[in-house]
Image (cartoon, rainbow, N blue to C red; front, side, top):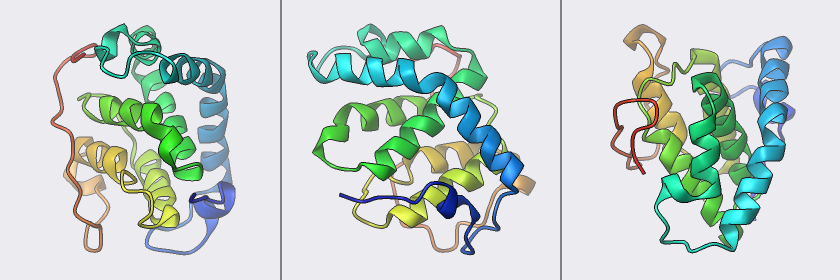
Length: 168
């Protein structure tokens, strides 16, 4: 199992400049707001049919109930959770990350993307899906705000779908 150090990963030197403490704290505050619902949805989906259409799952209904800012916070929380506890038990969380990554127009910020990238690099290669959401989010940033991709491992980015509730 791979673990990321949370605040330490967000504030240590590395490929991306450390985030100001207030910015990182605002991310954690937003993620804590969606965490209880996310945990409940993931737990319900763990015992459900894994072949169920995403929109019909507890996670799918949760995503459908949130505005774009809520979906971004849910994506960041799920990404963080999967990076901290990456193992076979994160199947549902990884599906949720892929589904959020496939949504266009979520309005990711450069700071959100940098935070996820720091988490991803800190997790190391054991977490195979670690760049799925950050790469998709980077693609939504204006070109001037995109962090350099010089040393990113090659990963497949889910094809993004149009519309807030697209996909299923």
